[in-house]
Amino acid sequence: MRYVSTRGEAAPRGFEDVLLAGLAEDGGLFLPESWPLLSTAEWRELRGLPYAELSARILHRFVGDALTLEELRGLTTATYSSFRHPAVVPLVQLGPRDFALELFHGPTLAFKDVALQLLGRLFDHVLKKRGERITIVGATSGDTGSAAIEACRDRAAVDIVILHPEGRTSEVQRRQMTTVMSANVANLAIQGSFDDCQDLVKAMFVDAPFRGEMKLAAVNSINWARIAAQIPYYVASALALGAPDREVAVSVPTGNFGNVLAAWAAKQMGLPIAKFIVASNRNDILTRFLVSNDMSARAVEPSLSPSMDIQVSSNFERLLFELLGRDPKATAAQMQGFRATGRMPIPDAAWRQATQHFQGFMLDDAGTLAEIAHLHEAAGYLADPHTAIGTAAARACAPTDPHMPVIIAATAHPAKFPDAVQRATGVHPPLPAALADLYERPERFTVLPNDLAAAQGFVRQHSRRNAA
Image 1 (cartoon, rainbow, N blue to C red):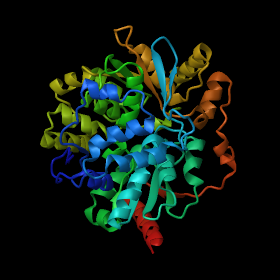
Image 2: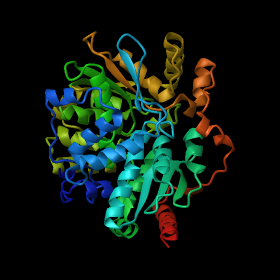
Image 3: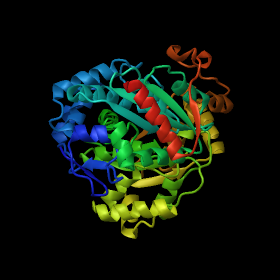
Image 4: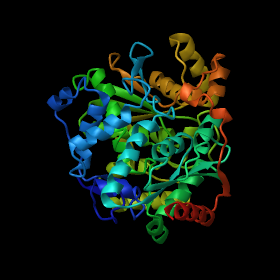
C-alpha cells in the first residue's frame, strides 16, 4: 500500500512514513494510491467479530507490509481492552430507524479515543523499530487534544504539545488536557480561534528546517492513520444493521470533516453507505457548500458544541482531491486560493458530484438545546450538544427509503458538556468514576499570542528539554 499527496509534489510513501509525517511536505494530505475493495463475501465474513479483531482486519488493508495481521491484532486488542464498554462502540436505538453509535467509551469520553489510543501504540511500535524520537504538535477545538495527550503521555520516544483556543473549550475539555502532569506533555492556550491554532500547526509543518529539527509528527486528522483507525467503527455498525446486504446512511456532527471522511472511506472500500449527512453548528461552512456551493470562510462563532467551531475544514481537501479527479495541481490551486482569499469556487460538476452523496444540515444553539431535551423526553437518552446536532440532522435529512437505518455518530459523553445538558434537561450528567476528581486536579498550561515564532520557540524548548 502506497500513499500520495493531494498536492502532488511529495514523493509517494508507505504507511510507516505516512504515520510519522502526518502532513505532506508540499502542504497536502496523504491518501491511498488506490482504495482496497472488499467483496460481498468478505464483508459478510467480518460480521459478528469482536471489535479489536474487526479493526485489525480492516486496518491491515491499509498498512501494507509495515505490520503483520498478528502485530496489528496485538495492538488493537491492547487498545480496546481498556474501553469501558465491552462492545467498544455500541449501537443504541433512538427511534424506529435511528441508531446512536456511541464512540465515547474510551478514557477521555470522546470519539477521538477510538483512533488515538491505537495511534499511540502504533507510534511506539514504529519508533522502537527505527530507534527514533518525535515531537507531536496538534491543534484541538476540544476533544482531540485530551485524547492525544492520553494516548501519548509518558511515552519514552514522544514529546507532545497541544494548542487549544484560550477560553473556547468546555471546562471539562480543558482540564482533561491541562491536568496531565507528565513531563513529555505541554499545553498552549492560544489567544485566538481553533482555526488560528490549526494554522500555526500547519505553518510549523511546512517550515522544512523546523520540521526536520523537531522531527514533527501529527495526531489530528491530517494524519491518514487517524482516519484509517476510524473506518472500522462505521464498518462494525453497518454490518450490525445488515450490511452488505442492506444499505445504511450515516449522520455525523463534524467541523473538520475527518469523522465523516472515515465513513466515506468505508464506502470507497465497498461498504454500502448510501447517504452521508454532514451536521454543522452555526459555523456552517460545510453545510453552505453542500446547499449552495458556498465555500467561504467566516469568523468563527463560539457555540455550545465547541468541537465543531471551525471554518477551515482540513479534511475537505481529501474529498476535493477525489471530486477533481485526483488532479493534484487543481487541488493545490484551489487550496492555495482559499488560503489567500477565504473563498473556494468549486467547479459546478464537482459540487454536484458531492451533493449526490452528501447532504448538509445546520442547527444553532437554541435548536441544539431543544434537541437535547427532545431526546431525553422521547427516548430517555442524554446526548451531548454535538451528538444532538447529529440526531436532529438524521431526522431532518432522513433517507427516502423508510427502511434504511441511519447511524448517528455519538461523538462525546454528555458529562463533557454538563452545563448545556443540564440547561436542556435539568439533569447534571456525572463524570465516570475515573474522572470524578477532575475539577480538583491542578492545571498546567501556557498562554501565548497567535504568533508563529512564539509557538515554535515553545515547542523547541519543550522538545529539547525532554530529549536531553
